[in-house]
Image (cartoon, rainbow, N blue to C red; front, side):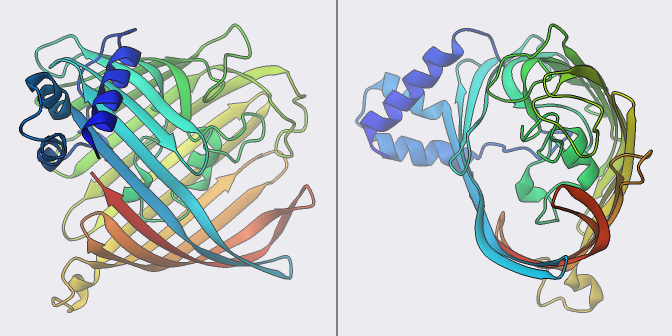
Length: 382
């Protein structure tokens, strides 16, 4: 990266973020896109030691990150075979540290749209109170705030999380990637054992204004009783504004406002021996109730007598249940099994078999076997 480009990027981020105050990114309760101290050294070298001090200072305040996930998918559904190469995500984001308490983040997915842009400000000397304003991931569910680069499944999130948080499968909300525009207060207390979060959001998703006069309230509480274990409960009270009609909820019309409430409870445990996380979720959209649960984990093959492979090769498994509409019996079971090989830091190769007992065909919910094989290559830098 040359001096002119880097300096222009830094100044542009600083100007954009001057509309609000911000602090430093929390990463205790989630696997976040965190910074790497080596990035400062790389940027300093790119700028040049003979550059003016103010340019060197700007370079020290910027962290650049990115990752790409691409692969191949084969599926057998309704007696038909399909296969395709796909580019799922190509994300780039920059963090600009304006002061010790104030920072800004901009994230763009080159395979879709601008995903995040927000400013943080830390009010306290510790991490007890931080305010965030802009477009970011909502705090609903255990999984939604987590990075896809750390999730075990190639499909990333469970069916319940994907539907209830606005990641894409709910036609009433549309594809919002689990993100929204709003304001958030969050922090860590009790020696980082407790984390709280309170979001006030449009409830309409990314890059769009609110569709009604109501705001969605999302609350999140996390407790870490021991190292590696995180217990999470979240809830949402809101009013949706339908951007489309839905097979799962046929009584809600396009443009109609409707009740949109959620609640979840889950836990995540991570260690060198294994990773395991699960969650129970409920949702209410108008008069329709939906609920689901999942359990997902990964175990290094070194646990089965292969120490030469170390921690690089892992067995992955997941069971996932979600009932989209309990009144209409739209229940779906999903099972995943496969391997993933971490060939360099956060870079990996994944191969997984996916089974579902229900799918959508010609705008109908069909109970029937759906088999698939997925392969994915993930490359990430911090």
